[in-house]
Image 1 (tube, one colour):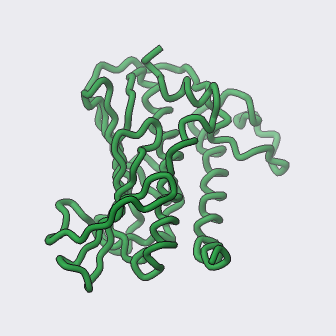
Image 2 (tube, one colour):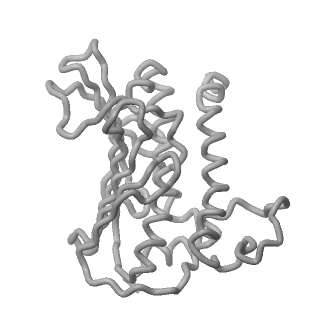
Length: 241
């Protein structure tokens, strides 16, 4: 039962694991609304620890020339900023300022990709540490996922945050490739697709995936919705005011 805890929870209720915790998008939205667009456009890193499936707290780090040390760190929990500090030096590992217009993969989508990959390899995990950063100016942000089981790191993954592509991964436990499919399919479904062709390689919503291409076809629908959300990020923020 422990083996695929996250998938079991999501199968029982797709919103259960996210009910009390913000996703990365939600945390950035809170940060932008309360700290302003200027700082939002200078975010260099987003971190979340002990995600089950989402972390309880996200730490947003942004470059701020007017702050002591030139940086500001804000912690967001359940739609609220719970702390703000100005470190005296740049945090270790902090990358370049991120282009959030190229952030199309939220942390819940990153979790889904990791969960699918670990299920295929039959490697259990019970929490994820998330880091979002951009190592090079002008390049898409990258997700670094560190997966743990009972306190032991069992895998790391690097995902492109604009396409969801797995760029690199490393596993530290025994693997057993499996052709089984996940039960939490609705988590990445984008709803009925009236434009879907009769291609037999593609499944319908509610059906098991028919392979990697099919999985990313349906995950792509989620990317489109997230990209639309990000496009309207600032306009909806202005409307809230």
